[in-house]
Structures are given as structure tokens and as C-alpha cells.
Length: 429
Image (cartoon, rainbow, N blue to C red; front, side, top):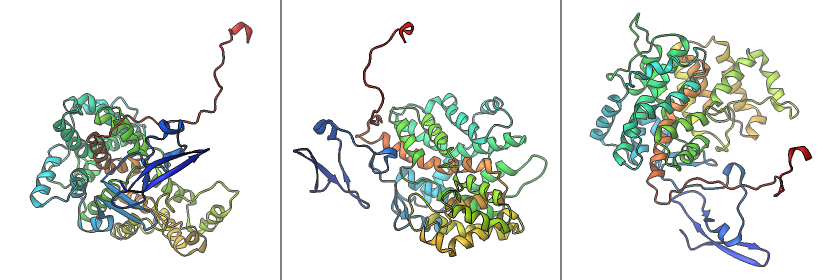
């Protein structure tokens, strides 16, 4: 709180509202008493100018291209940390010491297996079901398998539910992938790190030994780290809204998965890769660039620019380097889609049209290229996003549950329908 106040003048009435300050970032006007004082609400579609909570987890400065997890810059965490360590940081607020990290890693590893009866649950889905449809259903169903960790008033149960979701989400995702391609499920292995275990569950088969390439595992770990949390985005806000009703944690995360499925949110990297495939070959790029510049053409270049980051996406800077390492390792430079991506990237970084409008390649552009090269179908891209974002959702949910100011979410509206009117019997209409 600061000594500053904001004054709102309505007619001949002046109302004062306190101004609150965070540790960094813009101040906010506390309008909790607005309706009581004025009989009015604010109008803010998309809540883009509204702080719905106070949080100590993630901070974004779009103008500076800054992303902080608990105060630590994403570029430092990407270079020096691991996804499991980042999970600990987001959950508990501080980086772990060596002993704490080893113990946390061990606990997560020991919870990666899912209830055996969940295997039968998958059979209820059609073989051609989208993996995200499976994820939404299975994550929501976790409350039916792990009902001993659904009491949100019990801090121990909240802790167990948090660990279970972080640990089991890769297993659930890998099973969704295996089911979609008609291959047998692969059990998790406790001797592998988080990313390597996930890749092993996705790509190994019983008929032969599969060794995870450490460069690929590192790239996967990096993708998880870069997507671990992103402040109060649509899916995180969905988790918080669901949690505000005291819904069990599995239901809340399932709500987040469902929201993430939207192409305007988690489906952006899938949309970016589909666009590259639509372009097809490098010689067709000028045609699509011209379409993108044509205001009368509805075509949009996906994977460029960002709603929050105004100058550059700090995650994309890290991902660009990783994309090159993965492509060099796999030797897939002759892939037409990847050739289009590299040529389009070069144009975007040099063309004045892109530079002036700050349409730089974002994290979705590069992550899609990497995942395609590793061997994931586009239908799995958002699934991988949900695996990474689970820790962010859980951290935000835990923070909200422990907030003494917590209230059930209840957005208001500007009603523009019919006023009160009398019912007319059907024979007189």
C-alpha cells in the first residue's frame, strides 16, 4: 500500500481509492469498494487492465522482455538450472540446496507411476481421439483414483496432490501419445531424469532398447523450464477461478488443461508449425509474406510477436540456440518444413515490416520446430505444454488456497439484454 490515492469524479461526487504497490511493476488502484461507494462496476473485457490477485510467483515486464520466476531471470534458470529445480523454486519460493533438491527429485521420481486401473480408463477413448481430449479427461479423473489427496483444507493432502500431478503428468501425457499411435504403454523409470524419463515413455518400445540422447533430453528439459509458468494467463486464471470454489486440485488442473487447449493459448506452437507446412516450400514464402502484409487478407503469420512481450520474447532467445543444437544433432536440415522455418526466421529478423511491428519469432515458433524434429506429431505439442505448465498451475493454486483474502471468483457484467417484461401465453404470441 502507498500513501497515494486515486480520485474518481462522477457528476458532483468525488470518490477516493487507495493505490497499492508491488515489489516491481505498475501500481494498482484498489477498487474493491467501488460498487459500495458508487453503485457501479468497471468494464474490462479480458481483464487486461485488472489485477485479480496478488502473487509472488512470476513477474513479466513486456516492454523489457523480462520473465522472472520468484525473482530469477529465465535466461539464468535456463542456462544453469533444471526443470525439477525450477519446480521446487516455483512451489516453495526459494532455490533448493543440494540435499533438498536430491530429496525433492527422489520424491517426484517415486510418484511417476499411475494407478494401474487408469490404464483401462484410456480404452474408453477412440483411437483417433486428440491427445488433449484424453489429457482433459484423464487429469480430471485423477480425483477418482487419488481421493486421499482431495481435501484442500489439509495442507498435507495439498502437498501430496501437488507432487502427484508434477510427477504423473508426464506419464499421463506419454500414455495419451502411445494410445494415439497404437503402441503399448511404457512404465516410468526411476533411474532416469524427468525429461529423459518422459522421452523414454514416449519413444521406447518393448521390442528393442531405447537410449535417450542427452542433447534431446536437455532440449526437452529446457522447453519444460521455459513454459513452467507465465503469470496470470488464461489457463492459470482458469485454475485460480476453479480453485476459488474450493474444487479439488485435480479438477482445477483439468480446467487449466482444457483452457490451454485453445489455439489462441497453448495451441500456438501447433498453429505455427501448421502454418509452416501450409507454406510448404521456401519459394512460396514471398507469397505468404505478401498475404500477411495485405490488410484485406485474413491470413496471419503464426509464431511471430507476442501479446505481452513488446520487443522480444526472452524465452525465444534461449530456444533459438537450442533449436540449432537439436537440428544439427539430428541432421534434419533437408526437411522442407524446417527449411521454411529457417528462411522465414531470417526474413522476420531483417524485413523492416516485421521489425517496425515487432513481429519477432517467439517461443512457439522455435518450440514447434524442436518438437517436430524430435519426432512429436503436432497434436502432442499442447500436451507437452500442459506437462510443463502443471507446476505453474499448482504453485498458483497453492498460493491462492493459502491467501486469507481468497474469495470465490464472481466477475460482473454490463447487461444489454431485454429489461423486465411479462410472460405472454403461447396462444397470444
